[in-house]
Image (cartoon, rainbow, N blue to C red; front, top):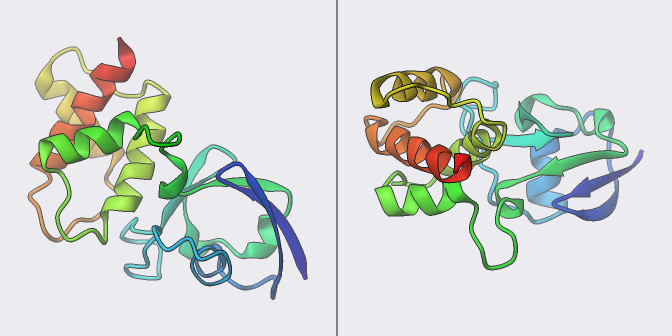
Length: 160
């Protein structure tokens, strides 16, 4: 099956089985290796991308469902040399360690931040809200505090 999709603003046409996972097409066919496979079962969030503006686990999406749709990967968050606010904050706050979960967290967090979903009135409520919004992203290296700090920081920066 020929599938045409817009990935990070560039149109790509791939000839693949309609049952091949979006994750595998991104990594193998398009060589966009930023998106990681963690569990392969939609439980960890490492493979999170945006499909038509909504955060999805790319390990659960058949490429046959993606024809004529827009995909944003971690590689597409930055605009040229300018990192997305979430990417900058993850670096500044030390919110990334081994790097397996980081791309999925960055994409999910960008989705949350760009839509203004972090609206906590104070630090404690904002942090609780971020933890809930990122519940589908598992990190085995951190206690999440630095990740949460980074996302709250990015939300404040974008909300200004």
